Image 1 (tube, rainbow, N blue to C red):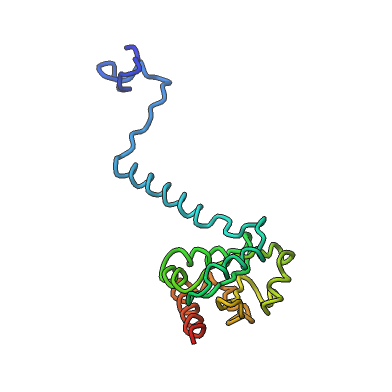
Image 2: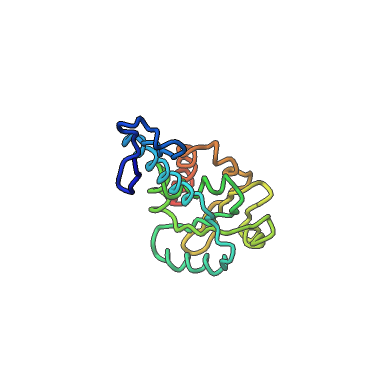
Amino acid sequence: MSLLPNQPCSGGAEGGAALKGAVRRPRTHPIMRKILIALVVAAAGMAHALSDPYDEAADAKAQIQAALSQVGPTKRSVLVVFGANWCGDCKVLDLAFTEGMSAALIATDYKVVKVNVGRFDRNADIAESYGVPLKSGIPAVAVLSSQGRVVYVTKAGELADARNMGDKGIYEFFSKIAAGASR
């Protein structure tokens, strides 16, 4: 029996004697193949979603000024988020801004500016100027009115446990801030 490229690897009448030593490729069930593809796509999506949300080369002061110019006469506030790419809670909060219950609220009420604090050695002066104590934990936020006035800041690490707050807790947190900022 000769093995041709288009010939299946089955023993046929010889009972597989000619295939000794040949490697048979296991057949994958079509449903299992679809599940595997779905898992790979989901993992790729999560990897993208959990990629580095904080631009380490950004000019944070310029980004905040640009955001203030963009919100101008609108009723939106500027949400300055202090965090770092190594911080799991920062990544969870960033994901909540784009998915789940909080996404619509954030998109409607805020212009988000993400400020990289590195290992607490970058942009600390900006956090300090808004009254945000980074030592209380990150992510930390400052909410600015369209005129640049500080409306709210996290003082006691309110978001530093974003992983355990869950989507509902994050939503409730920003709902309260949005209600207070609109007064």
